[in-house]
Image 1 (cartoon, rainbow, N blue to C red):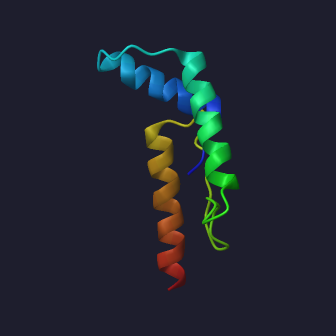
Image 2 (image 1 turned 90 degrees about the vertical axis):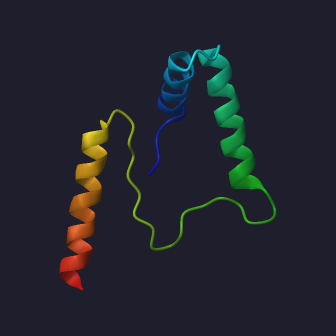
Length: 81
């Protein structure tokens, strides 16, 4: 699963606020973008999807929407079996 930097920062921001942890949305965006870059550009084991990975962009998708996507994909794979 993937999501935009803005989406992930917003989720983290809301999570922190709900837990009473001070948060700054712009700082979170910057930190997430920097981490993404470092993870995907490191020399040893750069973070990248496997060749046979199923990706799903969860930007703007509800938890129910994500669950539905996973269930449909799992059923399709199981039915092929």
